[in-house]
View 1 (cartoon, helix red, strand yellow):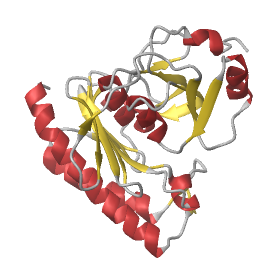
View 2: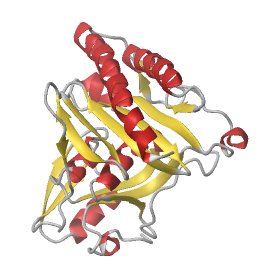
View 3: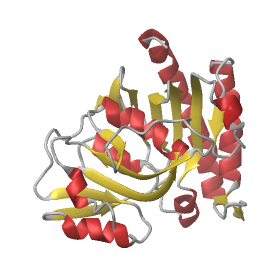
View 4: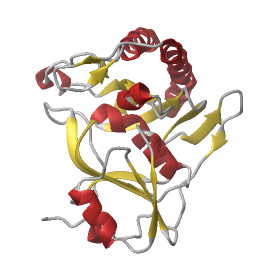
Length: 271
C-alpha cells in the first residue's frame, strides 16, 4: 500500500479509535458487568460495543480488507495465509485495567501488510492521549484538543536505564532480568502504554516473557518502529512477524530504543 493511501487512512482510523473511546468511557462511567471468556480472560460491554463500532467503521474504510479482532473468532490459517494486508485490532486493550479503573487501557488499531504493521493507533481515552503513525509515516502523540506532536525514542539508553514493566507481578524470568541489569529505574504501566513510553523517549527497555497476542503488539509496533525503536523476539532480536501460523500469539518479546546495547546479555536465555 503506497504512502499516500496510508496517509489517507491514518486520520480516519484515528477518528474511529476516538469514537470507540467515547463509547468505552460512557460505559466506564456508568458501571458495567464483567464476564469471563472461555480462555479465562475478562470481557465487558465496552469490549463488545467498541468491537462492533470498529469493525463497522473499518469495513467502510476499506471493504476489501479483512479484519482480525480479539473479540471476533478469526478465520482459520488456511484462509488467512493468503492475506497480504488486513486490519488487526484490540477494541479494549487492558480490560483488567478497565475493570480495576486504573485508566490505563487503550484502543489498538493496526494495518498489517506482508506480515508487518505499517500503520498503528493507540488511543488511551481515560488519559486523553493518542499515539499514531507508521514506519513510512512518522510517529506522533496528540493530547485531546491539541495538535499532533512528533515523537522519537531516546537515541542512547540512559544511565540509569529506564525499564517499563506490566502491572502484574513480575515472574521469575523478569526478576532475573532485572537482577542482571546495571543500575536502573522501573515504571509500571498497563496495556500498550508501555510501548508508547519507549516511543516517546520516556523509557528504554521492556522485556515481556510469556505469550502475547498479535493484536496487543501490532499498533504499538508500527508506532515504535516509526519513532526509531524495535519490538523483537528475544532469541535473535528479529522483528516480530504477523499471521505466519495458526496461533495469533507469540512468546518472549523485547521492546527497546537503543539497538547498540546488547540486550540479550540481560535476558538469561536457557534458564
